[in-house]
Length: 139
Length: 173
Image (cartoon, rainbow over all chains, first blue to last red; front, side):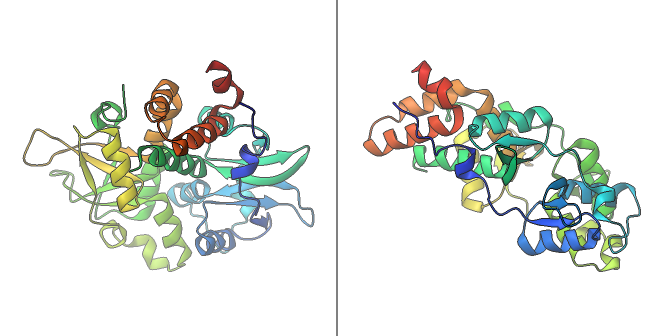
């Protein structure tokens, strides 16, 4: 059986990376997450498109739990997660899943050569796995 | 070992993190972070600990997104989701997957199969199922071989194997 080279992380990742500048407010990140129903926003610096971090639901949760963060005033860069962890787009979904489990994170940026080309989340992987199992069992 | 023989009780989380319904989202957020989990079960009070709802990490972000300061001090009873969807602890892994699918939810509260009271004994999430399947490639393998009957299944099998395990699984066959 030959491997179909298209069924890898690149086939399942989300190519639309939602980004915000690190100097914007936490409020703008929360609003974007709610509007798009997503769990994270990739953070960029100034005019460059290179990601410098990621702000996740968990960062926001923490800010509410421990600090008196004022979403209108606090900047994204003050609470975002760094460094960015990534996986190559030709990795298998299993590789991506193992990495998330090992690092205890829920999302990875996807790289092609040295460029960021997408994002893949644990929820994407879980859904793919259970969808397949469900198809197998014809439930 | 099969998807029908693995019981819910064998992989559920028995440490259920709760918060009382008079607490606020800051308190619930703290508990989620401290325990590295995505939801807390809301109970009526410390003494009876009767589960009355659930609040998730996504709920917290959605509530903050409303930017209404009074929501930060609202009691969890006004913010939580209810009713709770439950499953019996002697149910199978298949029952768990099916229930999550049919209700379109990612967490199930597990109740005892022994008592009539319906005592809560654990919780399972889609992440628990996912992690268990990732750890038990043999289970996935047997699931695949047991179902290798139709052409359709053959296709799914190939796709599945390639997706998840790449070369390793294919070389092993």
